[in-house]
Amino acid sequence: MINTNTLDALRAEGVTLVDPSTTFIDDGVVIGRGTIVHPGVTLEGRTRIGANCRIRSWVRITDSVIGDNVHINDSCVIAESQVDDGCTVGPFSHLRPGSHMKAGSHVGNFVELKKTVLGEGSKANHLAYLGDSTIGAGVNIGAGTITCNYDGQKKHPTVIEDGAFIGSDSQLIAPVRVGAGAYVAAGSSITEDVPPGALGIARGRQTNILDWARRRGQKSEAGSKK
Image (cartoon, rainbow, N blue to C red):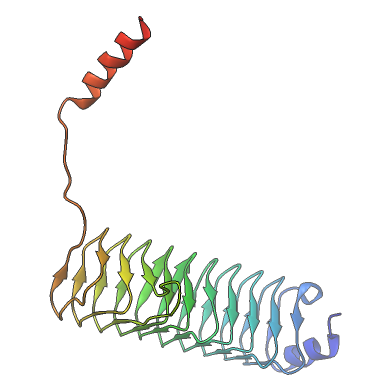
């Protein structure tokens, strides 16, 4: 049941609730002045949200701390995590317990963090899983990146230092460290540390078979005449 007294008190303190009839906010939740909460939002437990934030529709936040000027896009789930000032989350992002987005960092479409620190200004904007990771400042995480943290028995850490660039569709097989300013080539499976400033490449060599499509077509045509 929606507690209208809690909602009325928040509005009196300068919080905008776009549609109170579809908004659920626990009594213990604190929200700063100037924050806008859109329809369908659920804020639970000991959640603290700063000033001038925008919480878009169908977001659930539980026992988390959100800083000032944070934009949380539609359909995100945030649990037992911390999001510092000026961050952007989502849409469709999942911050699992123990995650910490530092100031100005971004996670985007279908990105999942679990027990991970994402450094200041770092970005993981598309389709990534980052678990048991410590990621420095100014890091770019390419689409489809996975930290492979579980070997079937134990969890292992991944460390990505400041200014590193992780190419799309890379797998970082923990435990592993990518040094400051290093690059990981797209499509790599990294099993060893990448030194600072180095380029790590770990993928099969491409082979092009010339004229393959025409010859395949001839074989198919011959087979159909039998």
